[in-house]
Structure formats: C-alpha cells, structure tokens
Amino acid sequence: MTIRRLTPILLALFALVAPATAHASRTMEIGIQDDAVFLQQIGYGRQAAFDRAAEIGVTTVRANMIWSRILLGKQAEQRTRPKKPRYDWVQFDQLVDEARARGLRVELTLTGPVPRWASAERKVGTRNPSPQAFARFASDVAKRYKGKVERYSIWNEPNWHSWLSPARTAAAQYRKIYTASYSAIKRADRKAEVVLGELAPQARPGASFAPLRFLRDVLCVDGRWRKRSGCGTVRADAVSLHPYDYKNPPTYKRVPTDDVTIGTVSRLTNALTRLRRAKALATGSGREPAVHLTEFAYFASGSLAFPRATRARYITQAFELARKNPKISQLLYFGLLQQPDVQWNTGLLRPNGTPDAPFTALQNWVAREKRAGRLDPAE
Image 1 (cartoon, helix red, strand yellow):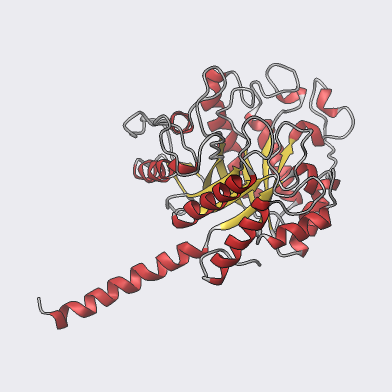
Image 2: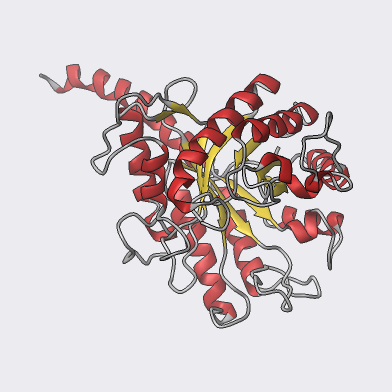
C-alpha cells in the first residue's frame, strides 16, 4: 500500500481516536465532601466553604444521606413502617439549592443505618436491611430532588462489615439493595445517574472484604471473571471506590491483588472491562461504566499524618495520576476543614479556615490543568 493511499486511512483513524482522548482528558471532575461543614456548618459556614471550594476548582459536592437519621421524630425506632414516612430535608435542601446556585453538581450517597422497621433484625442498624424498603426510600429522595441532584450512589462501603452485615451474605444483600434502588431511582428520575460501589479500598481481616473480591461476588463472577448462569446483567452509570492508602505515597503499588488503592486504580478499570465483556455489568446503553473515586485524603494529624509539604505533594500526585487515566471521571477529596479534635482529620484548610499547604498545592495544580484544558470545566 502506498503512502498516498495510507494517509486517508490514518487520518480517519486519528479523527476517531483523537477526539475521544481529548474528551477523556477533560472529563475528570474535582469533588469535595465534608458533611460536618457543608451540611451541619460545624466550625465553618456553608457559604464560606463554597467560596473555598471554588478556589480549588471543585465542580461536584458529595454528601451522605443516612436513612434513619433524616426521619423525623421517633419514626426510625418504630416497629412498623409509618403509612407515610416524614423526613427532615432542611439541610439537604439548603445544600442542593446553594450548590446549584453556584453551578455545582450534587451527588448523594444513600445509605444505612436503616430504621428499625426496615431491618430483618428489627433494630436500627446495617444488619439485613430490606431491599424493597430501601428502594422506596431511594424513590422518595429521587422524587424530591428530580432535576436537582445529578447522581446517587447506593450504600456506603458495603464491603466493610460494620456498614453491611452479616459479612457472609453482604454481597448478595448488596446486589438486591442496589438493583432495587437503581430501578426505583430511574423510575422517579430517568436522567439521574445511579452509581454502584462506594467500595472501601482494602481487605482487613474481620473488618472488610477486598473491593475486587466483593465486586465479583456481587456480580456473580468467578475468579476468572466468568459470570455464573442465572445471573443477569447489572446496570450502573458508574462504579465508585475510596482509594485511600494512608501510609504510602500515591505511586505505591505493593498491595494485595484484589485491593485497589490510588496507585493501583487500573486494577478496577481493567476489572470493569472484563465485567462488561462477561455481561455482568454495563451502563444502560451497554457500555463500560466510568470510575468515580469518591473519597480520598491524607491525614493532617495523628500517627498517620505526613509533614505538610509531603502531604501537599502526595495529594497533587494523586490527582495527577487519576487525571491521566481516561476511565476515571472523578476524584473527590474527603475533608475541607481540619478539626484536630476529631479522629478523621484530613482537611485542606487549617482549623481557623485559612489555606494549609495542601490546599494551595491543589489549587495551583487544578488551575494549571484547567488552563491546559485537561479538567472538567465548572458549570
């Protein structure tokens, strides 16, 4: 074949490949979550928090909606389901409305503990929740925020035993909870995205399952990524993971095979390709779901904390690693304001609300990436 005949073919291939690559490099969202601040306004006002979020280029705000905690009065403690559950929506209404006024996307993680009447154990908690009851709750939320909340994820860290138990049936339970909630949300708001996962990153003996092992169990797939007969395809708009690795730099890869940390996220993206091919997991249009990294942080204090300069470098390295993977659609930093009296102290701002070194480093990195057109633009 001559060069003259080959050139049009190469140009055609480039036209197909180049735009997809360019688009992928612009789609990663910068997210933030700090429920104490954005919902409860503890130590910092919501508007001030939104101002700071804008400074680091945030385009998405996430919050956890815990079912039993938003029921009014003593409904969560009742033995039988109220005829019409009543909810305290105030904090979430304010968050959603104020975020949207600033052009930010909102995503809610719907999770337990569930009310007493929605558990087979007849206790408020995370043991044997009713998939049907949880799906009704998910429907109530989606109806209220139709057209306002762009994305819902179902359950928080279901592979962590204290979040969903008993452990031996957690995967089967999660499949039922997720699929029922997916259908309920899509019926209430067909445009809303529904996300599977919110998986914890690593196995801990007696505490959690490795995320890839748990994902295989949920989707009826064996160790060779072959789907068992009798299991249908699960639909998801994305899969979410919390790729924490508190003790190591983000480039660290020496973790067990089924764990997925920030340095080994390609394990999850590769797994999603296999799951789509096995017809175990796909989007509604049959495509491979995107990956959302919906919690990530390094500690600002305590035994796991790094020096400020090291922490700043590691955080920006993590965002750079995620941005370079075209299958990752979001990286969300967990913690805006440092609260030293709280064990989970990962904030980017000092306790007085002024920027710490990691905040400034991330702010500068985001600004450079946006100038280069490599990040999702603000709405």
